[in-house]
Image 1 (cartoon, rainbow, N blue to C red):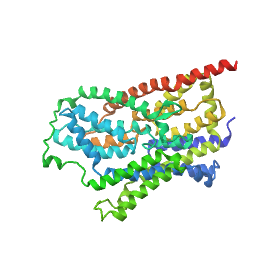
Image 2: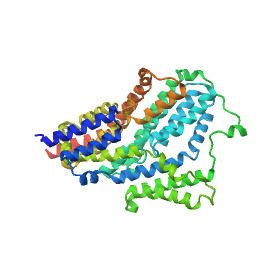
Image 3: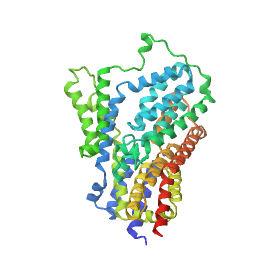
Image 4: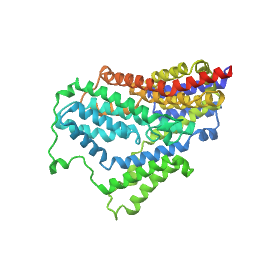
Length: 457
């Protein structure tokens, strides 16, 4: 039976998430207000609210965003865009496909919004020279950058939350429990999607524009290339070392947040101590800190506390009980329901809160029932990421991409035109990923469960 406090907690949580989605009030203010209301209602104490926040994840976010901010100043993203331009050989659909594909792989290490901000100027540069609409290309970058963030541990918040809840390490996103996991499956899905979109672009007005590669002259080289190779080398070296150290966390025996913070601190110390002597020309630290999305960080802090309130009042156990009957009857049925319901929900709801809530539910199922949680974990984070590409409400990166493209082109895209990109992108990615999920992660465990049931009889 549902207790009054549980009902009150759910009402507060759902009301907070609704206000976050409609954005009548600033999302951070609403989220923090939701935490305060929960404390006043007796859902949790202020001490418990603080303890529910996973400060390890918050530290990872701040540290990686800071390093990624320096990376964006190196000129490497623009250089990679220039390489994509030359490889396109006058083919706009090929150029857009290459730059979009590149954005997806960069987003495995950098926040997707940061990727959009880094690569949009590359498209604008080419667009101004050859007069094609930039919105479609920028929107494709937004879709791609929101795709691969779950492939590894660093790129987006859902994999970091999965690490926090399940304890999975960096290499577990490549190979886990003797099976290929997030990186190989999402990469294969991603390559299928971008290939399909290349043919879509070939049938669009983009195909009517001809690009001619610029001659390799000094004027050409004055484009968006690396301005200070020393600065770029230091940033990349520290970035790579940080990633390697995070992948070896178990050997060091420290938290991932500590390693990420140490990497960011090392980079800052190098600039402060050796910046002038080595002529690194690094941006001032205060400027880099000002560029961090502190509102997003505050939202994530409040988000952890809000979900902690649900856990503290045992609301998540009620949700778990609803899922148990489906999963126990059939792992295929239960996982499929979780996958497709998640894809539908996150298309219109900011997916971080939803994913974090269900991660705790799945963890509790694995601890209380004889159920392997990993097919469910993967179904949740993959569908939660891929489905969020449906609307700008589900993926902030799409909002940023759309507004930047519309400003550059000087016209607003109608909803139908936006959906002509997002709907096929989401459907193709979800279907391909679901097939791989069933083959790799559901059927093997379903057969094992069936054999175990036969022996138990």
